[in-house]
Length: 315
Ligand code: PEP
Ligand code: MG
Image (cartoon, rainbow, N blue to C red; front, side, top):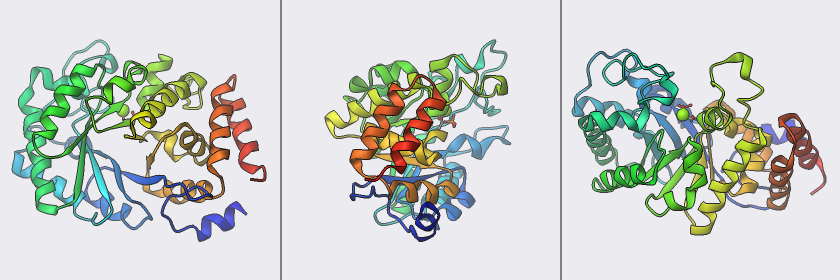
């Protein structure tokens, strides 16, 4: 039945009883955006801008940035939107013109939005480039910052984005942001949960360390509780709370995330059909039961087994 559903599923993202869930793609550049738009998606939930600049020594001009970003925005039109993430340089993604050198603990260091503290012009130029690309293409553009830990950082960022007429959000990748999601939502338009880093920081386990894979598993109940807190805060105020980490690409976990109140799922384009097809087989009530089971589980394996059993139960 699952295979037949996969073959016939055409989007848009809906549960079996018709509740909408926005399915979005993660992209890295114009070429991946062109490819992603062929999938049944409603836009891009994560454009990782730093990936455009991994081979650059110097900061690109605003005009150069506008051209690069416009290539990602252009394929998307009516009824679609693109979430552009500002530079997430540092740690696992070194960018020559932005990254701090010689940090002892780069994952806990000056990375992501923190780089703009010492170099505000970097963010200023990037926001100018994004705003110009949005103007040229007419594509609905949302902008979010990575590695945000405090409400004050979120407010300052949101002010800068809104002054350019764009929708402003932040990623929830640091447990502090999940725990205070309701306060963050007072100052931003949307939140997007980055489960890769949220898991790393919640479990104190390096996401690149193969030996720690059992800890850096988004099915870890502690991580899911942070996600549930964030999604619940979004529901309370009716603002969009998405997931854009690897967790969104796992069809079973995606159902549980929807059950927690997550409103969009952004993933590698190749994963969209599998997630959409699975979601179409479960009701909202089932999704809620799946969320509860995953949250109550003692460990990732137990959570996955319980959620699978619920997915396969008659609805
Ligand atoms: C994440 O941390 O989950 C995320 C989406 O960002 P990145 O993988 O680029 O760090
Ligand atoms: Mg991240």
